[in-house]
Length: 116
Length: 112
Image (cartoon, rainbow over all chains, first blue to last red; front, side, top):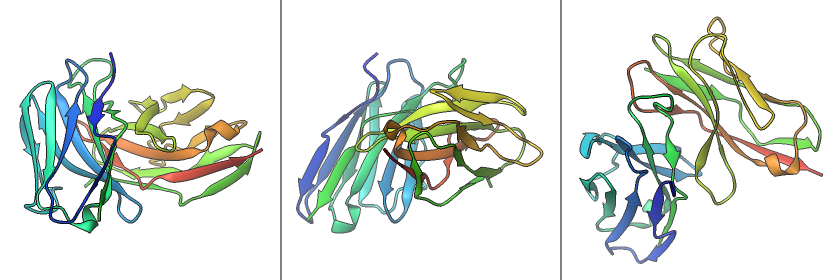
């Protein structure tokens, strides 16, 4: 398997613009997670899905952030409008609900977002 | 709630030195414990795991033992290499939960 695939790898945008980050989880995985990583706050869980259904979005910082998972092979994280404090590396991860690799999360390479 | 505490970094070592990164946790029940590693510019990847008390996880010369009596899961390596320079995260998965609780990460810098 190719692993978790995120796009784009780098995104530079101006304050106020809409940003969409994309994620393709590992085929067959039941869970999908979105994280944000900054030097100040470390690794934060934003939202996670089980079988395409959002389970917990309590980590989403503001209404400007939204996430969708229209099918088992694709998810998006959208920021509208973006602000400079949203600059961070955003990671997507996926995992299985059962089996020997249960709860092991596999991470994508991340999207480095810079909001100017 | 669940929490993970790991030693602050950076940890700076010379090549071939012995490494210990401390990790302690708070959780109800019997969590599974993990060490993840993040190399520069990359995502986190699983280094090793342990699912029950006294289990030892090992990979690439790294080891960690699940100690329930001390609620610890310290990471060790007998002889570090420059290529081990990375950020190491301790994490736990609570019994019946699908999410991971991560520590803040410890940066390891190994010089030749």
